[in-house]
Image (cartoon, rainbow, N blue to C red):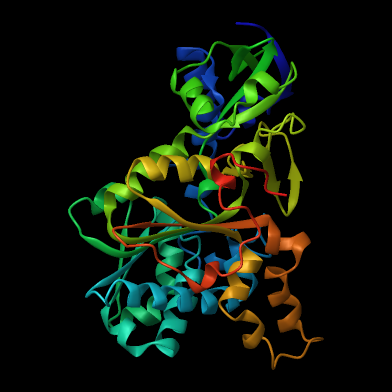
Length: 414
């Protein structure tokens, strides 16, 4: 071990949650754990992980108690306004036409939160295209039993009407199914556990491990836990290591490229739509971004300390969209286009949808969050990939603020 880089006090053992006790017990039994393992336990421990216990499974108001939303720790685009879904269904209908209106046409939504986007998409689908909703199969990939119950409540009207809606705990569950349609994720990839690395001198790279000593969590540096870390940076790191100053700390997204392989395996023909906040590799690993992108959220307040409120706060890191594009290309997913949320919505006619809305109304103030450059409009990116479709042109990709090769290292985002 190189030595502690930070120490953070934790509650006394008598007041520690079962989750903290399990994390500390694993460290005591096996030694320091990678930050990725710590993040996995904090977010996805089956008993007390942050995303596994959101809301109360027995409360009729569980969706209001959820940590996702205006009253929770953070909100997503589906909490803001159904306008996003109204635009997205127009894009999905165009994709349906490009695929020759298959039956069934499948939408696989991964990490569907409270099910609000699914609800709004189904509602918009019924309004937009009666032919599509008669063939639509909507599959939700959700590993949290509590979140699944919240989603079931929000989608109960459509289930009762006989719409084809089903839940699966993982993409692997779909291996035997033929998916022709869309694999959709909205603010999913930023919640995947990440490894953290630090350049200590010259070209020496260490990984951040989490230890527990003297009643507190400590970060230790040691050689990387897996050669996949160096492989990742060589493939998707834009050559950053040689340019980084000593002390440079950042994230390595091994889980996201594994996920990309799973998506490509499941999708037989169609499109992958990935919406999230993040950067291309050249911007993500720019030498000026010396502390990485890791952030925690609790009651809409951001912090950089993942070792407090363990299991009670969100932990997130921005997405490396270049890694998704490059890995996708290696497994049969061709980049259709890359844009930001504002330009995607403009391409689908959002301005016409808002033409009759009072500019001073609350509805307009909510909807405009999607278009404001300092808000979701430019912060959120939209990566579209396709498989077994020849050179498609999509309405949502009419306006592209980035150079065509920016995902693959040709130029900068800005």
